[in-house]
Length: 146
Ligand SMILES: [Zn+2]
Ligand SMILES: [Zn+2]
Image 1 (tube, helix red, strand yellow):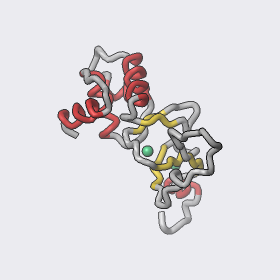
Image 2 (cartoon, rainbow, N blue to C red; image 1 turned 90 degrees about the vertical axis):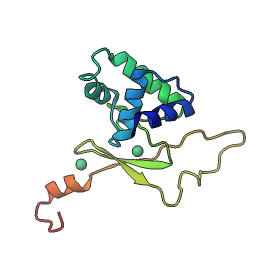
Image 3 (spheres, helix red, strand yellow; image 1 turned 60 degrees about the vertical axis):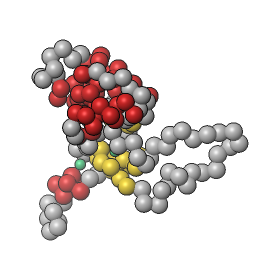
Image 4 (tube, rainbow, N blue to C red; image 1 turned 45 degrees about the horizontal axis):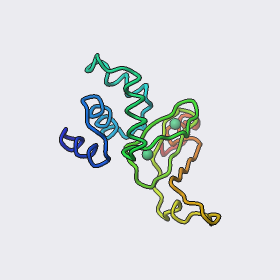
């Protein structure tokens, strides 16, 4: 994504742009791998020696608060982030630790269970845990389709 598009994205979400915030947002928009704060820091630090871990954490907190990104707690040891704020579920492979996007065709999150009166849903998180195709293949090497 070009720099001006990232700038626009931040402004649209009410985030005052700074060099660091632009870099973090751009990384999230370009990497749909659900990176953690540490991964983002490690990736950006070589090009931005002045960037601190605290800045990365604070930026991610701000982006999440402003709705520019979502925070996933699918892996409780490793909070990760996603610039795709559309309605989708996540799948954590417990073997390789990767987090995959799962599309919701039936808009399951919209068909919310009946809420008690006066309750408003602001966020829905659907998490699945299991074994991804690649890891399943490694377990069953005789499978022909791998
Ligand atoms: Zn896996
Ligand atoms: Zn996602």
